[in-house]
Amino acid sequence: MKPAADDPFYQQLPVFTRFEGVVDTDNYMPLPEGWVLALADIVGSTGEIAEGRYKAVNMAGASVISAVLNAVGSQDYPFSFGGDGAVVALPARHAGTAGAALAAIRAWVRTQLQLSMRVALVPVADVRAAGHEVRVARFAASPLVSYAMFTGGGTSWAERQMKAGLYGVPETVDEPPDLTGLSCRWSPIPARNGEIVSIIVRPTSAASMAEFQAMVESIVQIISEQARDGHPVPEDGPRLIYASEGIEMEARAAAPSTNRLLARLKIALMLRLVILLHRLNITLGTFNTRSYAADVAANSDFRKFEDGLKMTVDVDEAHRRRIETLLEASEARGICEYGLHRQDSALMTCFVVSPTMRNHMHFIDGANGGYAVAARQLAEKHPRLNTAPS
Image 1 (spheres, one colour):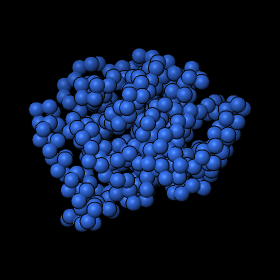
Image 2 (cartoon, rainbow, N blue to C red; image 1 turned 60 degrees about the horizontal axis):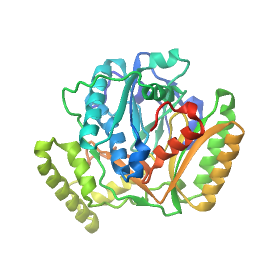
Image 3 (tube, rainbow, N blue to C red; image 1 turned 120 degrees about the vertical axis):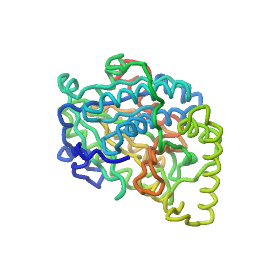
Image 4 (cartoon, one colour; image 1 turned 90 degrees about the horizontal axis):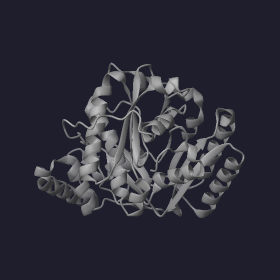
């Protein structure tokens, strides 16, 4: 996968390193004219999660990023993982390719994960015509990886249109999606400070943005009092797991049904080898599993901004109560709308184009509902934010 050198917008954005910068409007730039938003989410995700299918739901959400970026041949476009879905921003010249990838991933999710997925391709011009904007910033989660932050209300508007049945893509599928790099080999990550809390907080209006920004800064400050700023992944990385469910889903992403057995065996053998190398701290060529695991922790996207604050953090009860008190007071004053879900562990899904390169990306969610349940809470309190069940 090579960067698209003739689309320099995202690569040229300045990178900020302090997460508090997500509320600094100077860090954001509007998408260029002629771009599109490729987005998707799982229908009925909270019901699927209630049945214990949270790993499949997260795999489906991350598969959207993998399929679209692999199809256009570059990781250097802005995207955001939302737990049960994702959004990717692209130049219009990739609209056809992205639409085909969305159709392919919808079919793959239906046949291989037994989930129903909505997909849409929304022109940014239509977002702006509706009175919204899509502005993008780059936050460096580590010196190795940066993630896109979105503001302006445009991605939220596009999601509402998708849920209303607009901007869909045809069902025709010419080829299966390219899901190279998509994996879920890590164990659920248990809370160390107390519990894993998934939070979604959105501003109510432009008029209250100054107060909203101050509230976000206060939340970040509270969480910074916890070990590693509430990062749910241990500094030396999560624990590898040898689990049939993860192997099966990765095999389905890696190979068609005719070659599935071989893919399962290959993944299982590779995983056993990696676990052994990690246990013995053996370097194979240039690859050291313990160094890789530490990079996994550093590169994880446990906090982000997509038309509002999204975080999956590890906090103790006292800090969680302080956050809830602040959110409740801010919501009562009309500054924000929020959803919050508590669980005992976090879940990681990965996009690793090459394990020998250090810019691998890792998507964090709560392991028992996470963002999907927090979003459902928010929508139930504020029905105007949702036009279809999720």
